[in-house]
Length: 593
Ligand code: GAP
View 1: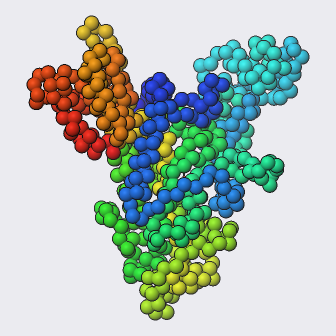
View 2: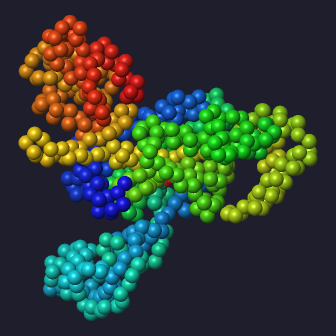
């Protein structure tokens, strides 16, 4: 990542341009001027996303015995969003520009310096009048005439046709108010003074049913997680699983972000890959195992143990997710932000943000939260449907406890409730009622939630992979060579297949044979146009890790020992090796899957 903001912007522009030029990512609805915060994935982007999705799904569900998959609907009963807290609290603080009504997230306004100018009204020769009094920031270095021109253009844009031509608008009663430094009270794009910060709910509303009345309002899901909670009991009852176990889901999520930005990083429509991993409450672990294992630096996290409480499970998932990112080539660009008690939601015990280096800064890729039993309990209360599970082992172990041992557990919990720094402590009567259920073997499971964004992951791998080098050819002509060093597991095209010459039918036939052999197992690209160097370069630019060239040796022209061999080229090292066609699949498959 560059520390120079201009270089960072230039780097992002190059990535955005490559994405469009080579078919990774396009602006949605581009022919109609776009659609803010929404992106379409082209042929290569679709493959890249599919590979990331499969990597997540295989690692998190298929390759594990303790995680099941779910594919829930985007539209759900709005009561889910009320119970989860999204209707009341899923909001960003937002401020509105007094000049243009454009909104900006209150925490996204960078400090600015300049002179505050005030106007009381505007008129135009069309007879149009504007009776508002507004202030705007003329940034340091901005000439007064270009500032006025900018303000006229913004007012005209907002007023529509009635105002006529922007240059004919007359700004009335201009006053120079004050010089300010480090002010966060002006819109970063327009310079218009910002109003008070107000909460703005991020959920996208829609109507279910033909009448479109308030009674039909529901929301496009802002996260996939809630469907997992809402279906927890169905999955539990229909699968032979025991806590601890998890439910994973990949799917679209929608947020009416106030300021979508940084290409696909903050979008309004995006895809999440979320796991809700359900665990026993620590008290249940203590009753069954006699203790809850404590976490310490260097603890063995390789295999889950029965005496793990929420803390070790949380650490375990941070470790698992780190390994996942290492497996797709992002291992060396990760950082971790452990939320402080002040950052945490009142129900959360811990949350770590896995951050990744993007050209525009080090930003969140995934959050891993220990959320207690908040979510399932919220749905249990709102739906009045029990979300408890029954644990025979717990019941048996609890039956062996003396009354004093039971009371000691209750007292420990009461002390923890009293020491809470956020949220209301649970009343003693509720704590005792909870333990009564626990001693009978029943509890609402707690949850660890690793929640990743697929679009952010795709952007992270593209940004990490992007490289440019300057090359000077034999004639002294400089050329910029772009290579995407994508990990073979995620690369959209795994192998380029090239006959050395396109006008030699024997070479073409053999190359077609190799292509047919490989493409059943991996995404390949057949290319017979241009020089072989040019074809390699085209594939390097889209991150294809391997190239297979079929030449005259492949036809046995230099001797029978080379018959049916090909040149296998490795993108990153440029190394070339001779490989038998019959060995190709065995060599490539483990590298790309
Ligand atoms: N269920 C928890 C949850 O949704 P979050 O931190 O709001 O937590 C999880 O979202 C992940 O989803 C983020 O780490 C990010 O990768 C992705 N994400 C969230 N908002 C996004 C947006 N507007 N555009 C793209 N990805 C987003």
